[in-house]
Image (cartoon, rainbow over all chains, first blue to last red; front, side, top):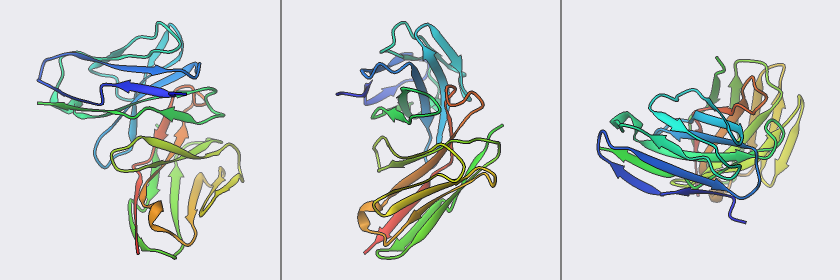
Length: 113
Length: 113
């Protein structure tokens, strides 16, 4: 059981470039989330989804976009990368929000230079 | 706005000693989660606390939740080096967890021989 899989694991972007962080889960979870973690800080929610076709903004959505065309996939799009987006990005999924824990992917370490 | 505060943020302790990490949060919530993160790794779920007075134990770790005081504690008994990690508490938002979790900044725990 692979769980939550993120790709790539590492990426360096130049300012103004765009990229998509991929996230796939094979647990048939409806709830999926994108967080970012800055050094010495907790995680902050970027976007979340409660099911295919439904997405909503979290605490720090500016500069990002998401889509949820299937239950399994929840890609995060960065448009016009900025140094402030240098961070570690975690995708997570949950079977039943508020009852069961969220499972996290291994993270994508992104540096914008 | 939901705020989650952990203290201490950094803790260095000796093997064999006991210590407690505190997690305070600012709004009413019946559910709280504890996660562990090793350096450069993802987050691993430790405990899911779903009601007032909930207490859970796993090995040398015990977590409790007091929703009236808006306080959770993570108690470490007879610490061993393998418990060195960063520990996060997280509280669900007003959407009952469907809209993600709010994390504390984490407690960086170092256990020395």
